[in-house]
Amino acid sequence: MIDKIAYLYLSDGKILSSRSKGKDTWYIPGGKREGTETDIETLVREIKEELSVNIKPETAKLYGVFEAQAHGHAEGVVVRMTCYTAEFKGELKAASEIEELRWLTSSDQDMISPVDKLIFSDLKSKGLLM
Image 1 (cartoon, rainbow, N blue to C red):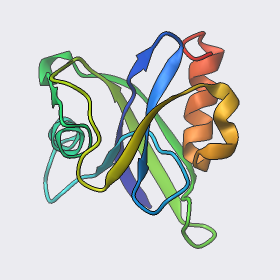
Image 2 (cartoon, one colour; image 1 turned 90 degrees about the vertical axis):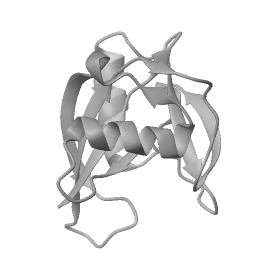
Image 3 (cartoon, one colour; image 1 turned 180 degrees about the vertical axis):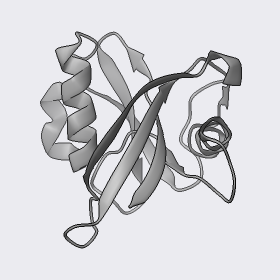
């Protein structure tokens, strides 16, 4: 089981997604916890590293937990994405291993990982994603 924390940032019916250097798949920003970090500590650190902004921890809200086959891993390796929304301070820009940021919609299913497909479908069913 791969345990990841993800940041759902939606605007105008689109979701912010990121692509790492040398990859062709887009992912919802976030990552794995380090040591004994809480979900929120992981969210704050990962989003600062990847998107150059400061999450306001007191605004973080759990959206949901999704599990699917881990993209690029052996069959049977599952990723669990615990998804949060939150406000931030700063200007969004790709940092660290992130090469590019892009706003995606539910029509971009062919560009994303299996677990992100579940999240996109859920967001669309709730009228949050075009």
